[in-house]
Amino acid sequence: MRAILAIDAGTTGVTALVVAGDGEIVSRGYQEFGQHFPQPGWVEHVPEEIWQATLEACRGALRSVDAGQLVGIGITNQRETVVLWDRETLGSPRRAIVWQDRRTASFCSDMASHEQRVTELTGLRIDPYFSATKLAWIREHEPHTWAHVESGRYAVGTVDSYLVARMTRGVHHLTDVSNASRTLLFDLTTGDWSDELCGLFGVPRDALPEIAPNWGELAVSDARSFLDLALPVAGIAGDQQSALFGQTCFDPGEVKCTYGTGSFILTNTGTELVRSDAGLLTTAAWRSPDGPMTYALEGSIFVTGAAVQWLRDGLQIVGSAAETEAIAAAVPSSDGVVFVPALTGLGAPHWDPTARGLIIGLTRGSTRGHIVRATLEAITYEVRDVVATMPEVTSLKVDGGASANNLLCQLQADQLGLEVARPRYVETTGLGAAFLAGLGVGLWSSFDDLRETWALDRAFSPEGDRAAADADYDRWLRAVERAKAWA
Image (cartoon, rainbow, N blue to C red):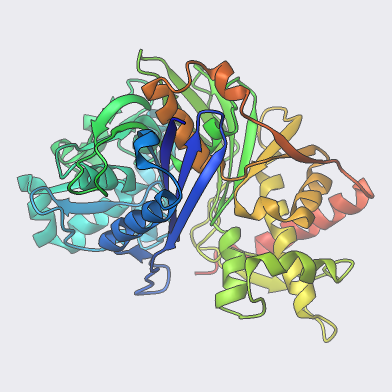
């Protein structure tokens, strides 16, 4: 057996998969890491904890397989999160600022006059979500740290870049177009860092990583640093583009939705750079080693799975995410309860960083079942918000942890009025990294080879009264308006 070690460095933990040449996941490992909230709206990670979680997850995945069967490493990662590290020691001078962090909301408001030009170059909008705003905050508030960035001592990158640096003992500082295109520093047309944007946000271009293709022999891990493995790092992509790849959405018009900490709906637009006037982002999907770039339109929803996590850890009304299906199914409806999970603001298509979470419609008869069901319904409404702004969608491929919830998938089909298709493996983010790396080392030779590995688990068709679904959605939109402009 020849296999790929795929590393999925997510927002709350790291998953490692060993994926064989037939597309089977033969082994898994997982390790959570800490979430830090030093102030309301701030979210941080300790880079060293991400690295240690990566090592532990990989150890777990390798316990039941022969490491000699591995032929390459694929990496996928939470995007937009910014990491600084010392190029010599690889230690980080500060915590990473996470994509969910909203501390730069006022900075973004001050930059509003530049938004048209920034959107023209990047396909994005000026929002706290994106990396450059976070780097500008560090530059303004931590001048001593920033001086080392400008002197060249500290490198700047996203989580993929940081992991590659740790794996290669600091030899390589690189990223790919999918991660680069989420920074507000990348020109979608040229496919490279923009001097104009670096100047606008005050980020020295020399601190940024080299932009590599998404597959090929990009780097080689150092056995002393990475579990005695000296393997080519052969595939890299940001998590949502990796899931699009893992769902084998290789043709223009194919759409996937990943239910993770947030939910992200991407549609492949091919080599055409398509722009949206309805709140969607234009982004790079991947670039092949021979040059052509594939683009995507994306709707980014900040809080979906994180809302379920909040039910578990914040409200403590569920013991685990897996319980939510049975608890929600125990009531026939949410009985008028609506939850807008704007816990870190609203993303697409509303884009309001000042929105905050709202539960409305509570009565003396409301129970935890109604709140849990309203949470699942909120996820489906948020996805409908985005799909409604996309070019004609005929079906939706779903993945991510919450897609294992049959009630959620059925509610989603009912809201969209479309078939929802769930693959046998819902860990398509990690699979995408494996597929990219497998292409990079020749384990698979073509997109057609990869399509043959995709298998359907279950298709959910719309049920029930369409008018009732529309009325529920209209009520959701009224609640969203009440949640806006709160902070």
